Length: 394
Image 1 (cartoon, helix red, strand yellow):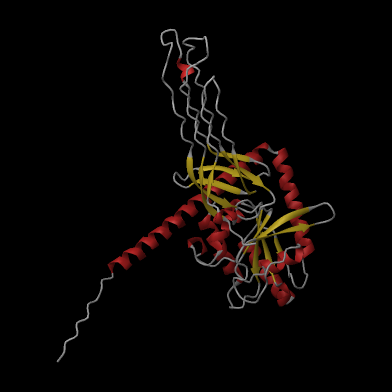
Image 2 (cartoon, one colour):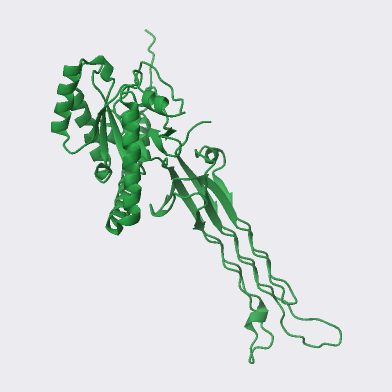
């Protein structure tokens, strides 16, 4: 199945039914009075988080959704039927943004959670409702109100406990393939990973966590270079960021400076995201001698104090058990703190909100830049005049 993590849709709630203009007409009953009923309310549109979905690809082929209109009222004080609500299934982890106002309407992060995105129109009123002691035969009715119409942008953020980041070919896909049942593409060229992937890492018989792999980041990723900026939002929901650093890059670059460059891109993308716990995994350590590895680890410990640093090799099966167990223990401690420490829970909620705001602001910035580029290209195309060629016969 093709992966799609952003989509735009248009939703139209149902129109309210019109009120009825009617008077009672029965044999032997003169001037029976008004009996026009009210219309029914228009149907609402809801989004519902569906755990079986993992992509927004369906919305590419069906971008428009409508709810049922309410039925009009009828004589004998009959009220019209209300329109049926429309429920649209989206993957768990979908953020909903109003594309016109840029307001974040909600965040569907729990399976079965629903979000009202378009309210149905209010019903019209029949003439029976306007009857009074001074107006025995009202001929006034009101029409049903139109339902809300909105253009929404859906953004999917993968639900994962641990998010992998690093340069292309840092070993992220190999790692997730070794410690989980995920089967990402692995090759000896950059940008092998084109879409994010999830893997469930089992630690023991009754403990597990979810790991997310996103395409590799490069310098300038926060401004759109490479593929990273397109998928950085998937790190927004993770509890721990695991930064993989190749200890012996093929281009001869310095691992420490590479790590600094990647985290600078992350800082530019979202300063709040940098407040998440960041672990460092020195990858492919089987390529270094023990003394060289120890010297490199010492450098990283000095550059990134107070951070857990692990030495691993996915292909060599070095340090993987220790890493996954340490991550599992940290995640369990994190969960306990959320339950027991009210201040920590409040801080975590506030942090998630600030990260979401950064992600939305960056998305708006990139979309605005894209529109400017398209406008400039269009202007350049319009500015090209036709060249008239005149042939002179001598």
